[in-house]
Image (cartoon, rainbow, N blue to C red; front, side, top):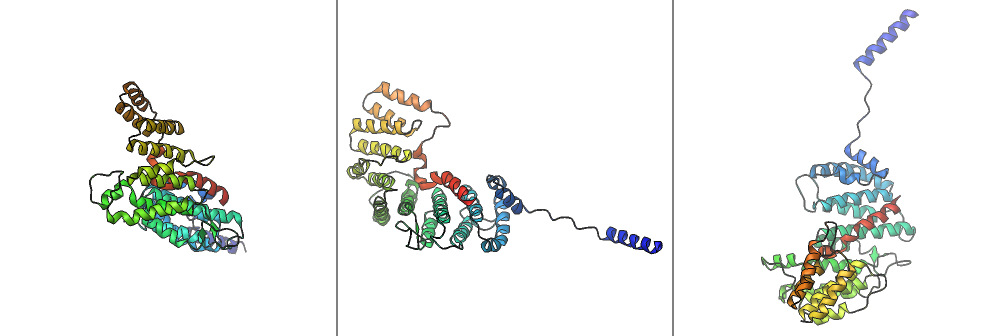
Length: 367
């Protein structure tokens, strides 16, 4: 009996030596990233995906995982997709590249995922809010890339789910910013650089020339801004942007009418700053220089540390023969800190300035 037991033990030992126990499979970069993300390490996405190769590998494994995610839909899944989109758009990977699928494909997957949630619209207000903000953030990221054509396509694909007049009983989600979002994409067709390329000009000017080829886009942008002024939540910004477009068209008097409209209490400080800055430019164009000085001064107070009103005031004071005041403004420009910001620099990127706050709220809703 002892001999038999010894033989069996030897056989087991020999078998273990020939066929060692399988080692646990190492987690893939995607699995490690997803585990960290679920644990609240949201910045791990940006730290992990630094190149197109990283991005391509993560998205490849993500595509294999999506079917199971759809079967067990959770807002944290959608949030992870959106953070991948954020990294892709921040890296300007909106066009197809040799490392793999394009960011457009990922954005489409993210949009499709969030719109195929299992509950119906109106059943869960928190998830309704989540979806509205999700689309708003995705569209803002596209605006940050001046991806006008793709943004317009995105809006068409969610048209049956969102409405500026939606809400309870309509079967559509309410997004009070939707009309302005549409106008912002049309405005992106008319940025100075875009117009210069369209006209094959080497000079990017704020002025939009009265050429027939731009008339349709101009009229549509004005109409969309006009529609957005009818929505209280976006009326101030829509009116300021419409006024600036009128100014660029050489219609300074009409622009002033827009800028002189009273702002709502608690208006976004960025919008208040733009209004005063653009009002100063319109008054300067009309030769009302002293009034322009006042408007640029309002812009300076609305956003201390902004460079644009200081430069404008230096030029105006010099033009008015006020050398001491002009020198004061030049000195103020020289004394600006590297941390000082100027909302004029982000004007052309639409709602992209809102992305950080949107992401923060979305992450809270996704928990």
